[in-house]
Amino acid sequence: MTPRLRKTILLSLLGLSYGFFSYNFFGGWWNSSFGTILILFFSYLIWKKDFLRHVGLQVNFKTFATSIILAVIVTICALLIMKHIAAKQNVVISYTSWRGYYHDIFYIINEEIVIGSILLFALVNKRKVRPIFASIGLAVIFSLIHFVFYKWIFNDKGILSVSTLITLFLVGFVRNSLILQTGHIGYSWALHFGWMVVMFGSKHVDLNSNLRVTEPERFNLYLGSIEMLGISIVLAGLSLTYWIKKYKSQHHI
Image (tube, rainbow, N blue to C red; front, top):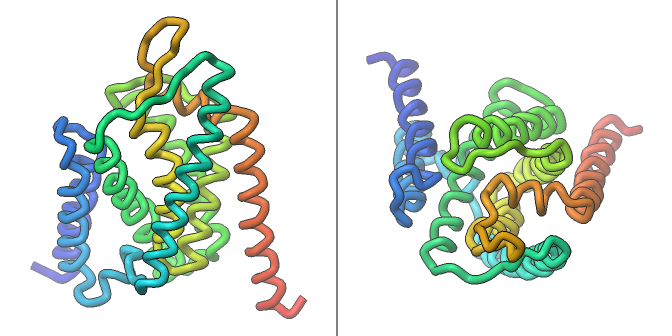
């Protein structure tokens, strides 16, 4: 077996591990953590001792602790924002079980590794794509993937609105920029987890119909809101400002 074929096979197995063990296809609350183990295992076989850099987990204790604190802060902010938005639509948010929150920790790690650091670092370091273009391009894909998956693949099917897709693009750009700017997934995971643990880890019920709010409905309700669109525009603007300043400093403008 040639090294190229071996790497292709291992990358395929890594991708399958992410696809099958991140989104509860098999119904077990532990699936996503098993997927994380598989992703790290195949990453090690591909990149050996350098695998932590490729998956964005080359962090020190200070960065790890800061990421946890940031995740707590974002979770509190996300809960307050979503409760405000939900109240206007007569939707209530309530606690489910620790299993749902456990699942969120690892499925988000899997996303940040596979469709975050691995793809971004490959585009920038191997394909020599400029970081800002890699960030924008992957943000477009990130947004479109959500539309495709909820329309045709996930069990909870639905159509994501235009405003939701725009917000997904903007937060995807912020997420990608954080990974490229820091070289790890710690802060991007914290932002992603803090939001998703409330939106997906918790229970959302429409009091008008007394029915569970589906996943695509949650996307449209929260990410499609004017509040989140405004917040995401501000965050994306800050990220874009960073890239512009970096470009000017590199070219002495």
